[in-house]
Length: 133
Image 1 (cartoon, rainbow, N blue to C red):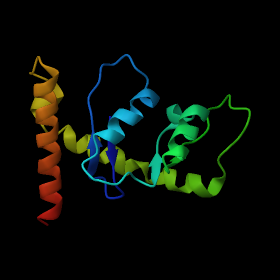
Image 2: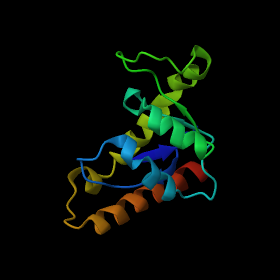
Image 3: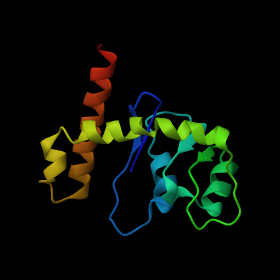
């Protein structure tokens, strides 16, 4: 799971097994942030539409922006904050940049710690490329 800034550069990144839902990995990813401060807004897809996650992030001072699921009864988002959701493609661009590293795509490493090290190295290369321009 990854968190990107408004330019699509990595801010936090973690790895986990495929079984836990993304909403359960938000705390772990925020704790693994490269920066000292947490973001003020967190934009996610419809899978993040959860009242419990929204309350938890509000207690941490983070605004959750996620479109509602189709079966949602009580609407909590208005259209103004969902306009920011259109810029979510920048997060997808981060994942596309990570796909350029063959070692991450194929995952040759058997140990999770080695894979996480190469993932952090790839994020470092992405950040260096962005700041060297």
